[in-house]
Image (cartoon, rainbow, N blue to C red; front, top):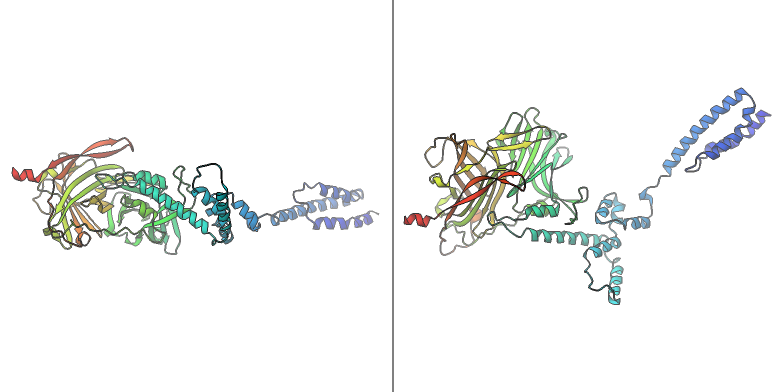
Length: 554
């Protein structure tokens, strides 16, 4: 009897094992089935009870396995939902979230570009404000016709219109902020405010020989009088042997809101500023070293620090001049940099009469500490100072001791990583801004320089102290600076400063009938003060006027 009743209970067991339990059930049905099935078998004897217990345990394990597979196979994916439901969900997102959702796959890209969603965002952001609260029938008709015309536009039309108009409005706001110019440097006064409004930042892209890219955000950022210094360092640098190039890019949020902090992980626009070849890190580009690192200079304005022992990357420092900084960091693309507008020579800049009315502002600094900050006005030169396609513009002459300027404090290029920091002696960052007669920038750069021993002034008698020189050259001109170390006072003195400008850039199309007369020349002395805004040491200028006409009369 027991065996027969056991055979009669086999089909329900098999059906229960083959069928998974209901989704989300607590197993109560399974317990009742087991009790009904095993109640008769437990009365047969001890051995049968043991077999039934083992069968029940194996059955529970089997049911748990089937339940897990069922839950996995029944998981709901957004990609499996109908397009109508997804469009309803996407209609609740803002512009930034829609752009992020469009990066999932091809289907989400087309759904996130739906014209009905974007025309609502567009009309909310750029629709004209109504003067009255009541909407008349004409406006209702226009709105309805506008809604009907959405289907006539190509896919993504209103998305492109919104992005284009949003970027144009931000550019117009930045242009208004950058319009006021500094009277001495000729650069925008509110560059810091423009950087804050645009949410502008900078990244470096390290590219390996295999094509792999490493994108690094700047770790430290300092804003100087006429330049910005961005620094990158960390622990997980890729090996230098595997790297080929380094790209410096400006990154800005696609949608910029002046009243809100830019979203760091939102969609951003990359603008290539410069591309550097890391194979040029050779002895010819080395600036200096200390006991831990060696630093190299790659034009324009990049400093690369390598550990002495491992010959691996320690830090990267980029020096960016304010001149067209916002344009270069926002208006380019990821592959092509922004092209600066060509310089148009003025009629007064004639090679027959030379150059006149130029103005120079030069800074030397490192780590926020300025050792030189000078402005020179009414600089001029004549045709006879043309040498090898360069026009010589003398700023400080060794013959006039009243023009000599001291460098305040210690000269050195400060560096920092997440573990160590230090200072490379005799190196610094030079910011140069040369303005033409009407106050427009003629030649601007921000680059590291190094003081090297010199036998003596090139056009004068030797001085009592040790002499040094600083040289810089690029496609637009050269700078030659000569210094003397005065041991008694423990400071450097600038005894000569000469600029060499390319004739091709300064050549006008026509020649004026007469030559302008040079005006008085401004000199200055540097005195240390404390800048209360940034809490760093800076220097202000104290002017001294010398009139060549009065000296001639005397």
